[in-house]
Amino acid sequence: MIISRLHSHHSKSNHASRNSHHDHQQIITAGNERRIRLVFFLTAGYALIQAAGGWLSGSLALIADSGHMLSDAAALLLALMAYRIARRPADSTRTYGFHRVRVLAALANGVTLLLLVVWIIGEAIGRIYAPTGILAGPMLIVAVIGLVVNLAGAWILWSGNRKDGNLRGALLHMVGDLLGSAGAIAAAVGIMFTGWTLLDPILSVLVALLIVRSAWGLVKDSVQVLLQVVPRGVDARIVEEGLSQLPEIREAGHFHAWVLTDETTIATVHVSPANGIDPFSLPSLVSAWLKERYAIDHVTVQIDPPGRLDREHR
Image 1 (tube, rainbow, N blue to C red):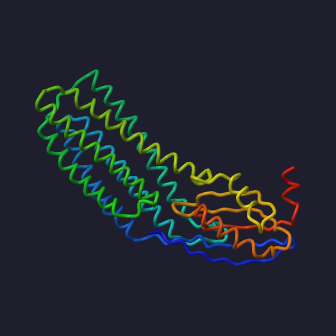
Image 2: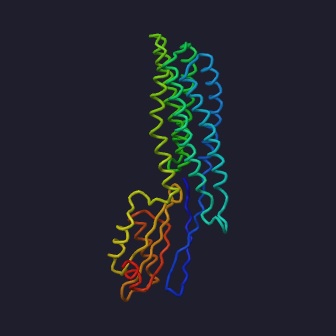
Image 3: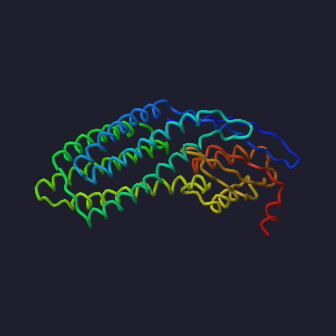
């Protein structure tokens, strides 16, 4: 589990503001990295075997799944590199550290999956118009071995922290591989009993289409994090209205929230105190309210003089 460490201090300014400063450095568990390393060796090793089996049997389903697994091996290697880079501590120019490297790795995983889908569909269309001979027996043996390898890899990743976007990307790759192996097995059995070789490219297309949904979701989530879209379930206007209704707060505005990576959400907001309220009591009040309502732990609160936000909103 990724653990967030929170440190804060408060300082006064000539605008009677008080901010809380957080250390966003996170601890990456060795377990997730170890799981991905093990699955990388499993995936890369079997991809070579599967490529040879697909070439010898003439099966597009095996060749496509081999390409899929090779891209998975590259993505897993990228994920391992991302974990190493993300361990580097924050510095004076990268105050949030390097954790978004993992978001970039997750985005790369999704993009490679989509590109692979395009390749599989293109190859399948060619096979439909120009069918080729397929050795169903060797194809079935290789596909069954692949299913076992992919089940082992998926189980290893499933037992890790699936809130880690980088690990989730790797898991989605393994699920795609499982579908590829299942499709290859179905195609091999069908060809053995019917002799209809078109089953091979048809099932390859079906597997590719199943992969699209997971890949697109991963790309979409990663892009939203990089664009600093507000977290799910958070509406800036509703948050400002809710804060304004607290008896200690006269006005609230300029609320911004974004996801740093995985479980870490950051927010900033301006508030002004109600009459008779100590302005330096508001940061802890606002932070506690946002944590309770929206599970936001990292909050920076600026205290503005009464009336300033009203003037800015006119």
